[in-house]
Length: 201
Ligand SMILES: Cc1cc2nc3c(=O)[nH]c(=O)nc-3n(C[C@H](O)[C@H](O)[C@H](O)COP(=O)(O)O)c2cc1C
Image (cartoon, rainbow, N blue to C red):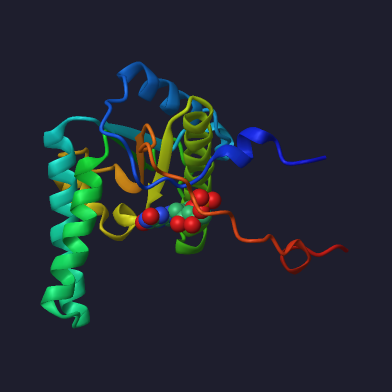
């Protein structure tokens, strides 16, 4: 068996054309995301489709200010912080569409102890990863490029405040979506050392 071509086809594409992504396409991508497996029939995700300049600006600047504060506390020189935050802001504001995956406790089991609470939240997080992969596979299949951006998991409050989201939505995974820029070719995938990554028993 070889890897299915639709799995091979998905790559992280960071250079996007400015062509808008139709809302029905974005809805199809979110629908694909929502077909992911999730713990005990829950759907512990909420999706925010951000395809207006205002929305992109608000999210990019809200998260950018938190990142600036974190980098300042880390002792990173101001000039370097300016470069990093400007590059991140430019990337988010230039993408025609962003899809923000949030986690919620709605539908999850509640436990009195921290160990099981963490495990339950971990399951929700795993399911969000599966959902995001579905979304990116569906995007690639429809001829759209995508790239997962980690930022919101580091600053969920900043992202929630920037977009005025409900208090129980925890912004966790951000995906850039658009047509690939004309001249973009992703680098070849690194060789896969399967024998180092899996074992048999
Ligand atoms: C949880 C997660 C966070 C990621 N965050 C970023 C990110 O912040 N910026 C970025 O450019 N790529 C990000 N990526 C994309 C990875 O860099 C990319 O998947 C990896 O290099 C493999 O390349 P491929 O997706 O083209 O196969 C992230 C991927 C995952 C799964």
